[in-house]
Length: 174
Image (cartoon, rainbow, N blue to C red; front, side):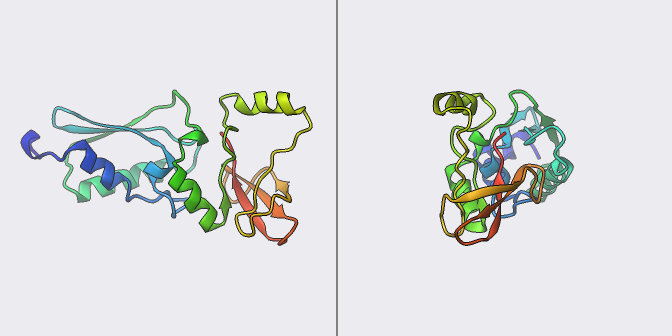
């Protein structure tokens, strides 16, 4: 691909928005907020990716999916850059993705509870015994309880609704 014929970065962002997260296929990699930058360095497309956490088992699959999708669109020279700082936070999940998670049956992260310290400040204001209120994605009840810190993937916790009695995953705040 010559520099004159290379696609605009907006087009590349659109292509990336079509790649589903391998663990939660109803949201894309851009919905998740892990694609940090797309830029051309001469004739090489550089895509910067921040994994949800450094040990995420899906990272290699995500990189393969990005490479496959972009090669299918004619990108010949491609460099994937892993960026660990700043660390990914659930605050980067788009509002649209949060709605998609709910519709899929996963409770999205509670706003303002990411690892940036806001949860700690909130707990201090409310008292150290203030529980995190997680809404059931099925019946919308706030009468829920944590069953396990670990759900179907390491980034989710398992909860149960005390009204509809259904179990569900909660996308943990990171």
